[in-house]
Length: 112
Image (cartoon, rainbow, N blue to C red; front, top):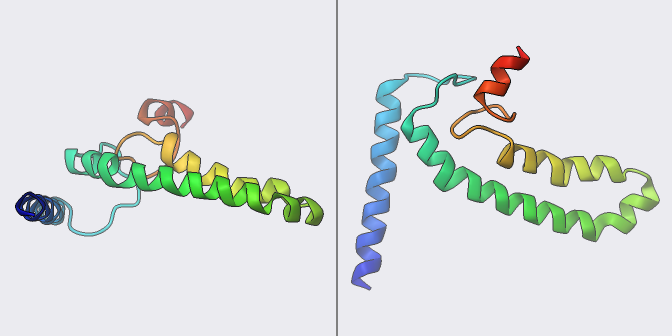
């Protein structure tokens, strides 16, 4: 029980420290981050990627369950795109800490 309290306090402190540092560094919202910082990368690795992987898995399960209905309606491609491809692309095809999906910063720069 004591370890749980200490771990919870440590995680809460880290989250608060990260939000304070992010507020001090950039006041306002940036649409596209060219060179993400360490807090953006760590937050993306620890929070966003596992949530994205879970959403992709749930979307894949929902797609399989809804497959008979979408096949009858004729919109299987759209359902697959929205339930599986889009969350998977945001999770696995984005550089660490970046806000736009793609293979990575180098590939995004080459495509421009």
